[in-house]
Length: 374
Image (cartoon, rainbow, N blue to C red):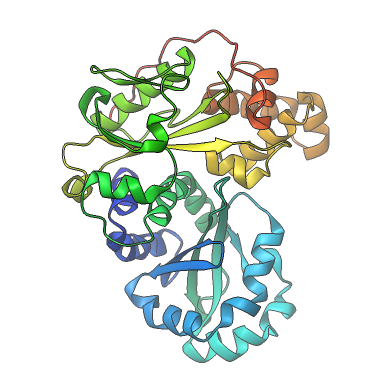
């Protein structure tokens, strides 16, 4: 399965959660593991789903109560890396081979090597993707990790959608939106609102403009990015530069990030006539969010997320280069990528966005031409 097809499948599963097992099977091929597991935690409630090959093992793991004392997950979260990590990133080989749960549960079932990522979002949800490999195949290689990292922003956006509807198939657009619990709208061709929930309607007109021709954003720059993202979603493109759109503080409303979730393939059976679902994530933090939260909000690579946080803390390009050991030219290229993906033009704007305090003041640049779909 090529990249575009897999991204489409990921977004399809975001709207129809019972498709996740097959998607997790494909992710297993990308990561060269036996299969994948996705679980979401909200407060004391957890939901999980797994690819067919890992279903029985995952079921026994959760029913056996291992989640409460698994050092593997604890170390993954403590490592706080905005990307996929392997066991040997968070354990020494000796520590991992001696781990009690590995020896008691995974090894007897023929497993024992994995790759995972934790995605924290400001709504409080915790999303974890985990791949498990057969014991005899050894640790997961770095090139497999790099391929999974390319898909991580799409996985984060789609899994947030699934987590918000509790991994249950939802009949009808309005029923789904009532369960989402954050401002949301189902958008048809040209951005016409098919359905909205009460939380999004409450943002009209300070943040959202409910127009018959197209649902729009009050901030001109953000609305331009929304129009481009909707054009990409309607055209079937997966290479849109900005699909998570910053919306600054305005008229008493907190800063938000608008996520455009494309509706693909059989997801159209649930959201009939829809092109995309628009989800609004609040950014009400008083201090800079962690790198993984920043990456969860925007389509950033792990390195770009760290750059964004460094810029948000006030560091210069030279200081970032000195701290990371990268060349100034490399950091400068990463900074430009961060600005492009967040819709920013100046460091001051990025600081304001990340702290949820300042408006976007830069002039909008013209939309770039969409690339041809492969």
